[in-house]
Length: 467
Image 1 (tube, rainbow, N blue to C red):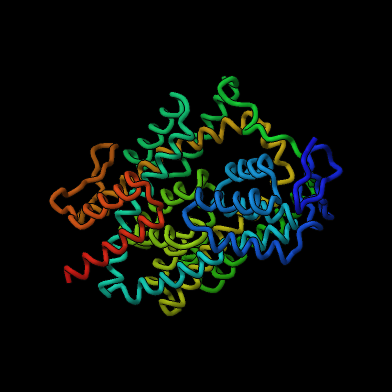
Image 2 (image 1 turned 45 degrees about the vertical axis):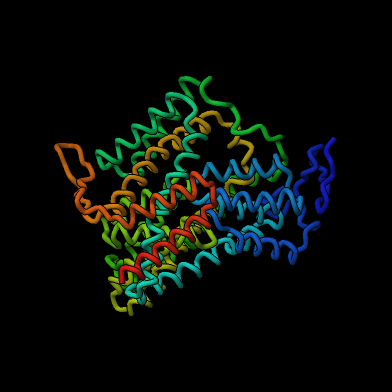
């Protein structure tokens, strides 16, 4: 017998106490909206958005504490079911989980508001920091902040890589797949989407030919009853979302031409939103490879500055794409002023990155049970997760090289490529702050926010003393 949870109605859909409150299109989740007022839900979503520091892990922990422990709007198995579904999708899992939880309480309207509020504080913060970055970068204390953040970010990424590897690399095949992915992208310059497609194909093949190696369910949460929608609903949803997603890019193309940097960025970040499985750090690998090396929108050190902004502000870590777009458009504004171009590029990058996140949730949530039970899907996504470990390792080395040494080039030897480091150009200030960050976070077990703050302070002190 299921215990009745405060603030929720026991549904009539079965003994799990999670009865669905269906709306007209069958898309409503398993929490009855009549038991949770709109005002109360709105206040909770605002609170979660303002507390969403610490990257995906910290953000998911905040949502678990609020929704499961404090409000008890969702029980533990249902929360894990929603989280596992979001982990299957491309894009930022924490923002998608916020959207899913909003959808569960108040249907599509709740999903839109919860997901948007989760983004808004980070968007405003990074937009303001981007303006400060380009307009006041010559100030010693501003330069010192970023001097301290860059080495600390290396430690943050390495810590995230370690946690991911422990969770994902559970057998020899997973380790080999991570190694192959690293070699493909580091030594051969393979595009990120190609690495992901190759890993997905291998995972699917392994699930078909060796089904015993893949669990039949992605977790052991009890099944729940919900609306299944249908193919008509899926078609209508797709026909509504596609113009919403690509419309702004089409308008800009008709106004400024197909070769405009805004159209180029819109297409790039739109593609990124559909291929970046594996969470925020896999997105960073793809963006760093393309935006820095191919498009030249910003320098490697500036990419680290943007990541430092995203790490120290609320909202998804993937908001670093906003800074990347701002910098690229600020330097190639076309008919607009540099700041106007940066603002437009920021809004466009966020739009094309996050609109698909809402689409995945609204389209897939009604079919979650079927998705969770598919062994081939589980094998495919498990392989993608393993490959992402190798991709993030490449990102870590790339960041470290460009932070600790002033001169780093891409060397080539036949088909191989490698980081050609001028070892005589090492940056002693960056090395010392890296050691400080590693000790503070890994030895003394301080939190990420505290570590970043300490290192930023150390950077300001070094810059002011040097001045």
